[in-house]
Every structure is written in C-alpha cells, then in structure tokens.
Image (cartoon, rainbow, N blue to C red):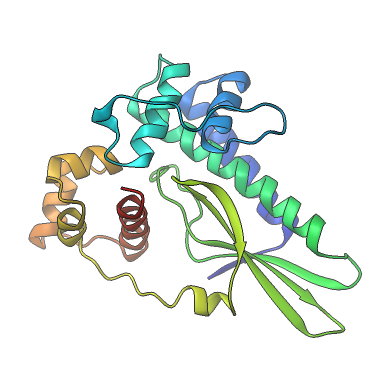
Length: 231
C-alpha cells in the first residue's frame, strides 16, 4: 500500500496528466469533452451519458464510452484513446481528492492522507488503475473515515467504505489471464486488443514461459471484473 499527502498526490496526478496529454496529442478543449463524457456533470456543461451507439460496441460500457469519445474526437487511434481515458481518470483523482478533503476535514483537527494499493496509473498500462482511498482521521475523536475514489466505466464516483480499507480490499484477486479470458468469453486476440497487451506476451504468460507481474495481474483482473459487472 502506497501512502501520500495531499500535495504529493496532486503533484503526481499533474505529472501523469501532462504525460497522458502529451501521449494523446489532444487539445485542452478536446480533453474537456472526453472528461464530460466519462464524468457527466451539470456543472460547467452536460453531455448526455445515454447517447445511443452502434450495437457492435454495446458489449461492455468502456467500449461505448470510447466510441462516444471517438465521435467527438474522430482523429484518434486506440493508443490515444487509452491515454485520453487515463488523463481523465488522473484529473478526476486529483479533483476528487481535493473536494473530499475540503468538504470533510478541518486542517487543524484532522490528519489526512491518500492511499493506493498499487501503481495508480502507469504510462505502460494507461487503461488500468489502482484502488485509491482518502483517509481522514479526526485527532481528538481518534476516528478515521475512508473514501474510495472510483473512476469506473459506469461513471466517475466516490464512496465511503464500510469499515477500514483492509475490509474493502478483502476480496483476493487470483485469476490467471486464461481465466480472465474465459470469464469474459473472448479470444486471446480480443483480450490483447482490449487491454493493449502484446499477444506474444500473453502467449508466454499462459504457456508458463514467463510470469505476469503480480501488480499487472491484479490491475488486469480488476478491469476484467469491472467489465463483467457492466455487461
């Protein structure tokens, strides 16, 4: 588990946003459109999240969102879309951490920190992200609350956990990539395309020639389970 103070976390999100913006090569205005599609809000404008897309893209909600983005930003390939989605997630992480701390704490009376259970957003795996929590401890009361920030395919949101982070993280993630594919009922080639993993790498993982890094497997499984939930 990684621990950050507010300024460290926001600085890290700024760096990631810069990297992902550079990677996708899109303007601030284009990224704002994508952000409103992934995180629709009446504040500052609203993009109808129920835009009807071609049935071929309705198998999972991420594909629908990506198709929506491409409708507004047509000159955009798959890698650029990944960077756009990752940029929007980093932006939401930054803004939501700031909002949660502002709304729920008092500087002199609280200890505040941000936790992540892995690499939050990696340029190598921009489509995946870690579980991120804001911890607010009231010093005099010795009481701590945890809020998870969840920029998912069903919408960008946050929620207070029941109990500790450990309670929220109890579900173990042990599927192999083969089991993940079976869970989604898709081919190796489709899995490779959807999660931007070279097919040769998948073949090596599944044949035992090399091992999928634990943190990559955990992030992949989280994305797979999320995709299954929104079908």
